Image 1 (cartoon, one colour):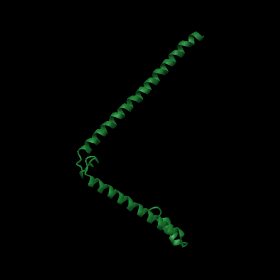
Image 2 (cartoon, one colour):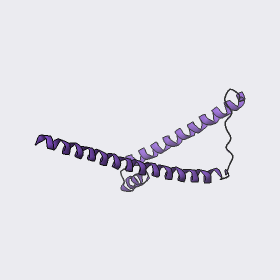
Image 3 (cartoon, rainbow, N blue to C red):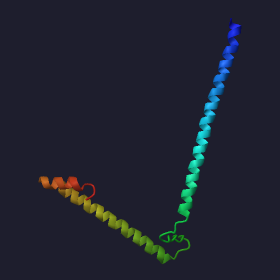
Length: 119
């Protein structure tokens, strides 16, 4: 009896293997087709974007090695002034919020809740 059962087992295992390979191949083929469709859509989109005229010209910064010293100093000073102004604005907002926290009236607490952290 075991000798008659062995070919049946091998045939069923072989059939199962073929079915699994066909199923995986089918999924792989569908994935490849979906990939090519997505690439086709990307090509169409990039063709549309390549045809668009730029609305403004972007100036590339001059490397610091080639730039004039006075221009570099002016850029550095402007960056420093912007940072200083941002620090002052943040400091003033913290002071205003602190004053709202120390007042006992309900209106100032409600105002603080409405404006924090944006005000």
